[in-house]
Length: 281
Image (cartoon, rainbow, N blue to C red; front, side, top):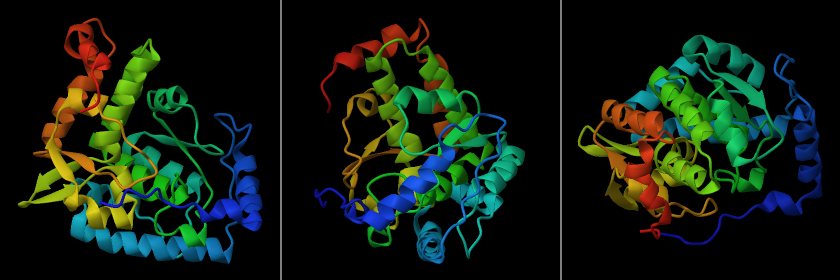
């Protein structure tokens, strides 16, 4: 597997940085109940969307789990332009009860997970630099929408996000929150499932990256293991060398849902707390 960090050409492009900051500024100060700012995307930004969304749609039929495909079909993203968060928010609310909140960029971990307990997903609105396509080193609106919002369009996956948010609010230490975040990463971000005699991707990080989708079956595939997932480090700038597989999405919903429902309660201490001091495997 390639161990080189993914490049970020946009950071050396002053025009891109100015445009990105302009879009980010639109969401600063936004409060629940305010209209979601509408971005007037440029022709170039729409072209990037069309190029990446088209490639991802083709890759999804080859590599994505059935349940992810159903969520994406229900969401019905446009083919020819970057969708507005406001229109997706209305659609998502009907499908799973989740709403979208615009944010200028990456938010603190506790804030991000806590919002899920309020049935709210925090999303950026800027588009990756054209030279960073198809895989930017940080989330952009393509990652958020094609990956996460498609997952949230499935009630079962939306429920797991909600339970993760509830669990995060019971975390009293940064170590316990980090453990929860790693489990989330190796499941709802980069999880894979056995379907039809092959591995399929359901995690948003995989489903929003053409390169990850084309490579994930070459990763080291381990069986679902909460303690190992919660103690394994990962680098968001690199392709993921280790992934964890589940036998079915129904099985995932039961097992991961049970973990999220109990994590942070008194009963979790005896089951998972020892892993918080375990070295990464």
